Length: 233
Image 1 (cartoon, rainbow, N blue to C red):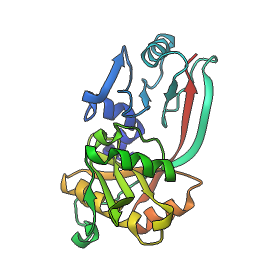
Image 2 (image 1 turned 90 degrees about the vertical axis):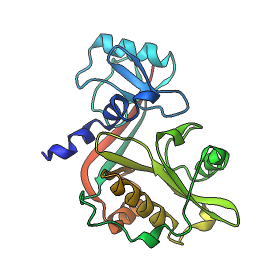
Image 3 (image 1 turned 180 degrees about the vertical axis):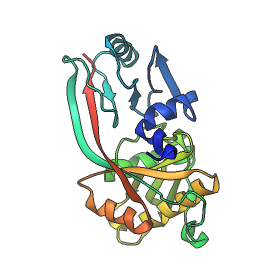
Image 4 (image 1 turned 90 degrees about the horizontal axis):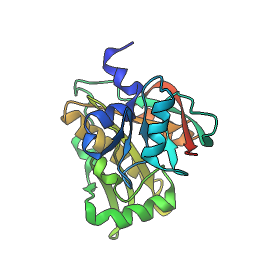
């Protein structure tokens, strides 16, 4: 195994222990993000009953335990909420020699706290994946506007050591086919590489269009993953 990719086996846990520690809530060995930042939770590789009980108390009865890609099995009274097959893809070059051309970021703007309402509106219309009022605190989010209206965005989510996940890639239906998603992803790749980190991402296996886009940009599949969520009893 490539030692540089070990952190990607548990990207949520590695993020909560490191770059996102200031956004974490913890109880024992269980951890999750602060409310309205993200729903992802982290457990050890082989959690016992006490650890599951800690996660239940941390989240609260009836709440979602989003285990992301962690291959652990909860107690039988935890109700399954979703199962989604996907893949983890990464940028193969780590030394910056594959830096996207500087011009690919033309027209791309950074989205601040004042952009959250329109970011939430775009997410509601395009459904790229989980995105909450404080999700933008996870990293840099970039967007493209047409006639003053936000029509496309993408940003950084999980941050295991040495890596930055590109996420929330979405384009409004009326603005598709203009290369916005590719421009945003390339701009984020450039920023991540400039920090001497490597970009990676997750995508649903059924989203063949997105997979093809990421492959054209230069991403390669590292592994298949299964995303799972459960309801806390």
